[in-house]
Length: 338
Image (cartoon, rainbow, N blue to C red):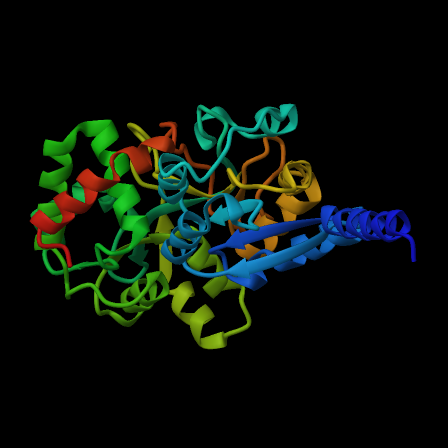
């Protein structure tokens, strides 16, 4: 076979392979597969773009992206905390995206000011109380849980939880480090037990009488109330939800969000996927299945969650959750929050 024909066939094969690989997008996600894959499958069905999903913890994915560098196959990093996305940006792992759809459909406080990451849904980290032992009129703010009346009555997860770190970071941004440290020390003094388990364990502890109030994410409560486990549902029905800090800054919120990686080989597909996740039907799916709140204005939460009542959320830009994370971690350690 003549050399020029052989070379031509080789180039054709390369172009065919590149074309095939171009019709895909690679996602690194710290969200559990069942909480995101149905939407990714729908995206593939609607667009013909194959989605390759890899799931792992946030820290594992960040280390993997860092070690892979420019050779990383990842196009999108998807996490369940704004602080992690801030860290990814600080590590140079994300790139800025100019997408009118993303800017239009995501409130400014739920996306990076530099447009390197974007909130896709949000959740509230608020107060849960025993319906039998606590009058909700006794509740008001996160800070008020440090009062003597709550001595030995508070349950919460450990300081290793990124959700507690981000709550603390939001308080540093709002009231300053000194007052945030005072709050952490006061809350630790009112713990009913050393922190153990996840958010559902705290809600179950309130239901069983192990403590009277807890701080947890709303979507875990929704999963217990609306899921198929009768025991979990019964426990959740013994617990009420209270929106914290309604007379000042509002209830702390955090996001599940994503950014396009600095190494993205399929940037156009990645941006297309992010915009797809902001379609009304995708936002409604998140709200119904995951018990989270849509970020897109005009898309209502699940009616069962709306029944909990409207609330004012903290409007601070969520980039502060990452900015103040180191201070928050140090502050929680000093407070003895384990």
